[in-house]
Amino acid sequence: MNSTPPADPAAELARIEALATVIRTPCGSGSMVWRAWGQGEPLILLHGGFGSWNHWVRNVEFLAQHFRVIAADMPGQGDSDDPDHPYDADSLAAIVAEGVRQVVPGDEPLRMMCFSFGSIIGGVVAASLGDRVLTYTGVGAAGMGDRGPATRQMIRITPDMPEDEQVRLRRHNLGILMFADEANIDPLADHIQEINMARNRIRSRPISLSDRLSRTFPLIKGRINLIWGSEDVTAVGFFEPRHAALKAIQPEAGIAMRDGVGHWVQYEDAEWFNPVALDLLTRR
Image (cartoon, rainbow, N blue to C red):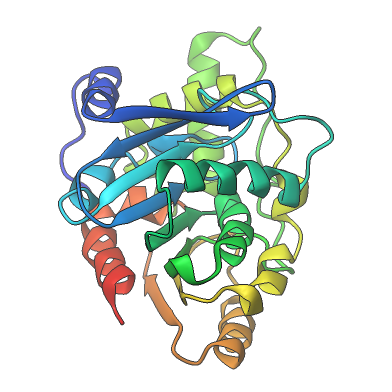
């Protein structure tokens, strides 16, 4: 579904990262790291749990042709420092919202697109920013209540395991949670998973398993969109009630689904995702 993967995944990730401007905003006793590409109307991207900006690696260059794309490493993940403890969805969102106010100052309108766990934090941020957020788009959104046992078959990886075993288990876990087709798990996806796991320092799963995003939808002023892969194990069996509940709140909400694709839809089928996301982001 994607173009030929790069021969050197670390070099490809570094190439895209080198095109960005790095911005830092307060986070705990340190800073939260943002990366910005392109010019124009701001588009904030928030990644999923055990992630960083690189959850959007197949999307930022396309989107930067249309927006000033500003992708976060959220508190306690990626290159950002840890939040103060204890933390919850509200305290994490407060850090991110303050960061958004600094990277997009004043009352300039903006758009948000948020993946998985980031959809919850982004939803709370969008609610706090009120009319400034023109559109909020959840991708494989978490925090919508009931879901299947998505992680039951995943296997814990420990540093003492042989490297080839760690690679095998990373691919296994990606195939359980993130991809519908294991053939789409390429070396770049494995590299991203490896570095993100090593840098994660917060527990996002309890927040992801909540219904916080669903309860936040009525507070979001901008138009709401949802994008899914039809085989997303976090949502299979629950699409219809989730969509019905959202449409009851906002009848004009946009919903798009890609058949045969899993949770990490923006990576597994970026060629489909990028134009669809652009359409939903800009639809009035």
